Length: 307
Image (cartoon, rainbow, N blue to C red; front, side, top):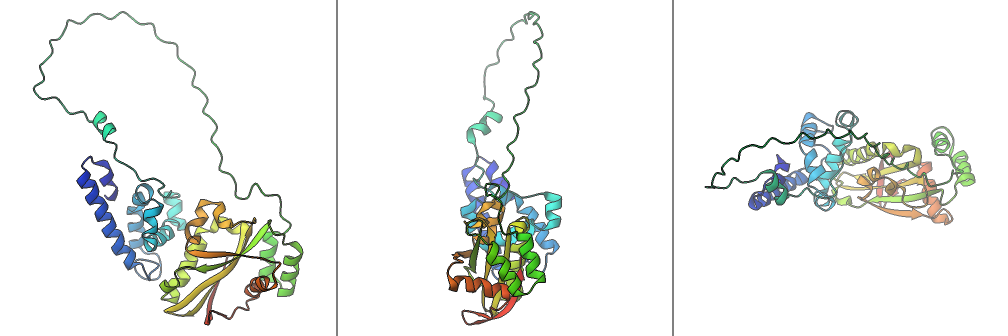
């Protein structure tokens, strides 16, 4: 198995194991360069089998630096491992922060080597040990209460703008009504608006792959829905595409970093905060919401994705 290289005291074996992992990951990363899944355009048994096999690799060996060396594999792995059915059976997968290391001292303590030609000690006659009084049983100490994970944005006061109301209006009202509600209730700092652009535009070779990239991102952001609204647009023809959009989210800072589970995909985007007091920046937000963005850097609108 890929993780077994950490459990041996032979340095050469460990180094060879890491070389094998690097070789395997490089081949897989190249294969996934323009693919969302291993085969076809949807999740298959091949994806599920390999992702489960690689789960220990991502949990115990591949820290952030190593994961960033294989961005295509990491994108694929997080897409598969965060599928609803996978989460239901396996639960969440924690990504490695510090790789597991072989502890030679601990290994020797647990596996002592027998001494060769050691003289046998003569057995002394057994002395009857004085009877010991049975120690009083100590009452178990109560366990310290576990620290509960802080709820996202729990440090912020209630906001004037309601995300539920805004989303309901987006789906059911005309643009003047949506704009009126936004203008009357948006308070900078309670919410913020961001422009996002995919960093690796040269990787967007096929429309299906680009769409699947956004769908996978939305799946992993499911827990963020009550705190954010997003529009992601695909522009251009296959082989010459751009992926860009706007997001409205809680707080004044980049809200994707409020929860570690929300940062997986946003690292692949350039994020620029828009100032709603500047007419040209507010106009970009308004045009996206109104569906009036027809092109991006000379490439025609192809597909929209709504979060």
